[in-house]
Length: 441
Image (tube, rainbow, N blue to C red; front, side, top):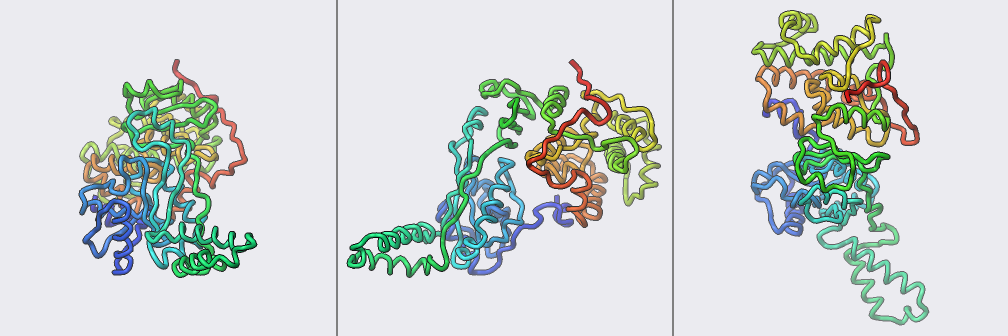
């Protein structure tokens, strides 16, 4: 994994904490939340304030996320909004925290100038013991304040001010006036600089959770569906009729198609998007050659073609299926004859432009593991898990490719691969990339 760290492909965009003041604030917040402190004088934190160095020091990667359920957080700076969320148990957690920081940017900037803001992402369960517990999590409420309770004190002070202004006899209430003066010493002028955090409740719609081996929960759908990596007996207790596993490719294809959640990578024959399919073919060639012991080294496009010819008889079905799609798109060949059970089938799709686009692309990345770029972009943890199993030549090639060709223009690459950000008001209608999708019954 050191190679990924070297290229900035792992733990990227973490916020460095190296000043005595910030370390002190972090320790006060940590003591407040979990009654522990760090002895480190330098470390890095993610959007939630989690530090991989402190996790190693404490021997607990979930020190801010007990039971993997109600994530606690420490905000030292609003710059944390650009950091990733490590060890995420729910796919929605990072966006919720980022939205909270964005919506309260001015207030948090003022608060963190004096002290750390500590809090918790609260939902209606304290521990996920059974898959059915996931359906009790309908919303996430953020509770946050400084260690000195500046937000709570400001709210109390505002109540005193309202009473002072609205009640006729309040002008003569020496106790009330004394209380206002005392609180104002710590809160400052809340009339000029309000100390109030907004939008603290967020809906928990469709999401992925790493609990129970990994489960995609699509409950805000016309046909509520759960897709698990592996089936477990406890899944039978969840309150949905449709339960699928990643091995049920036909069922997943039907679900995604019927609800208009996917669209073709190549919308029509002869489009420039054929280059995207060609890259996916190259990724399959690289994976196959590496698994067969080939020392890849620095490869040009021409050398990748040569490797493809060298191992032509040993290429997997993904290669042959993708070649069908490419010939159709690029060379006006016959329409591909791929059914949903074909290993190349899901490589032809991406999420349509809707609110759950990232979640669907995350699912598709698991269904197309030989496309290491999509796996890295859409499903980081699955990428890291797969990376550990790869042969050394593939690790070297993939890390260099991502650093040299993807990382230099992340936004441009994402838009080229997955389209612009979805417009919420638009609905997508889809009948398959070359014809209505065919399923195996």
